[in-house]
Length: 219
Image 1 (cartoon, helix red, strand yellow):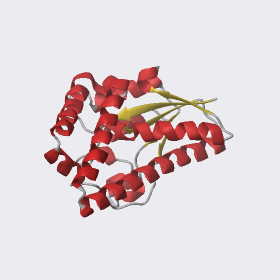
Image 2 (tube, rainbow, N blue to C red):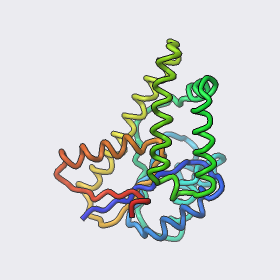
Image 3 (tube, one colour):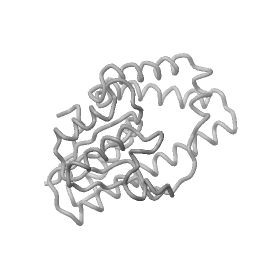
Image 4 (cartoon, rainbow, N blue to C red):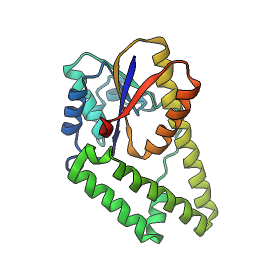
């Protein structure tokens, strides 16, 4: 039986959302495999190529926790975010925040609650509902502003995110078709939650191999 626990993360090291807390969660899960939203091939840095990317400036909470865990435990670590892209959205969210105070307040609440309650909040339905509301505001604000460049940025980023989610799940299912394991975890940003869980339902219908997916907070 293939069992995968999804651990949603914020990427940021803030309060209880830190690498130590995530390390403890991984240790409790005791997985045979860690699937990660990461692609080592996207960087030419020697630290990344040597698997020591936790020492890089700006390393995420996940990379630090995973590399610390791998130093103490001989298990498989499989980066699955291999979609080829070189565009990162930097201005769209700032623009939305400038014109919509609710969006700014929701984002601040997301940070505060993640800081106070860590991964249990990030993986909760409360966090999911907050992110869904932010997504709705994004779409409504982009439509209302009706700015050509902003529309292009929004559509481009939405397509990239959708393709990345497909790529990550395809890589996990392809690996599972060719290898036996009982227990794995998949660590991915919380902003992917709605899309990832929706796509998993579709995979359950069309794929012959059956994976028992769980979200950390549901266990």
